[in-house]
Image 1 (spheres, helix red, strand yellow):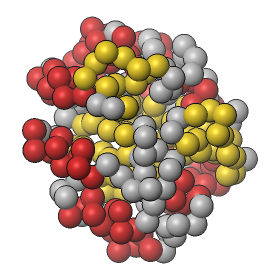
Image 2 (image 1 turned 90 degrees about the vertical axis):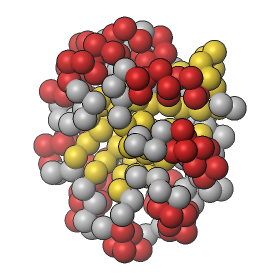
Image 3 (image 1 turned 30 degrees about the vertical axis):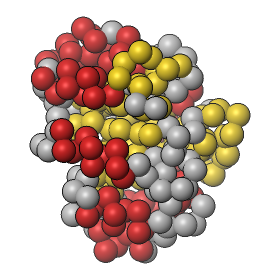
Length: 239
């Protein structure tokens, strides 16, 4: 069964969502992310994807106190991303309750450091973030496009020990128009043993079912929940 991973994106300590990574499109859904996390947990959810959007747009982790509050008041297994640019940021994330971290920009900008993290903490704790726009990796909170092509990027890091990848098609994210199913099928054809976590575009339970049928191991979704397109009750069939 596909693993369900709701997302809590944080700006100024609040639960928000963006459209296609555009910070000007910010919509606040809840002033208290802990309340949101507790509701997820009460409905059987076990995993949570927390993104520090302030951190992603800056040079260090920002909303670590919010991470700590969620981690200390729930038993959810949290992976944390956004602003992880140094060893100190990584330590802050783990010390504040993250069981896993996602590195995207760091994997492009400083591959040596990212590989050290994999060697030091293991592939269970270090997730590769592959945020894609037109098959190229985007960095710095999706504000910049790199020269890295998706498939060589994945090939390189799977050889270096990466086993889990969150792949977000930026063109789909927050648009509620369906996920990039063909892209994920293409990735799994190339890397059938990869624990691929699909992210972006999920608009309904039917989208989750389609990803499950395509063999995608896990899915991150947020806006569809916050907009009422998916209810927590509907998700019980996957839990």
